[in-house]
Length: 121
Image (cartoon, rainbow, N blue to C red; front, side, top):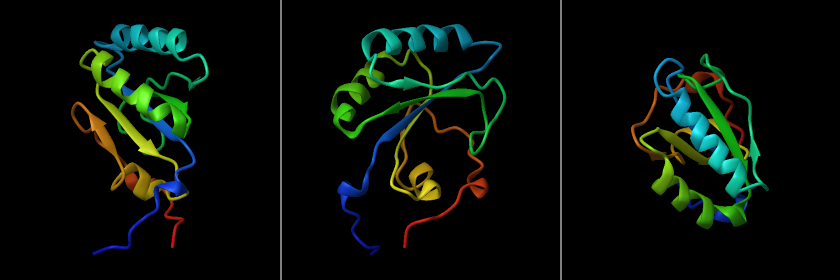
């Protein structure tokens, strides 16, 4: 068994909303507008119509605090409108956060994990 990780190491969360620029960008835009209106304290990142970083498909991210998880993630579950979403913690280990600690809403999308660093002991 691997070592138990204290959830206190979580500094925040990211939600990556995936979309197809040709087919579901409108759905992603409606979700983005609803997030901005309902959760103004969250940081909604830029559109990435091309793969960026470890993300193999188009996406934008939403950055949110630990205290917002119990309100925001259930909202995403109910309002994702068929879009696939990765929710992951920020623990200082980007590789593990995007892989082992990943929470998928919908279908998991291709990831290029080799571009991420492992930082935790």
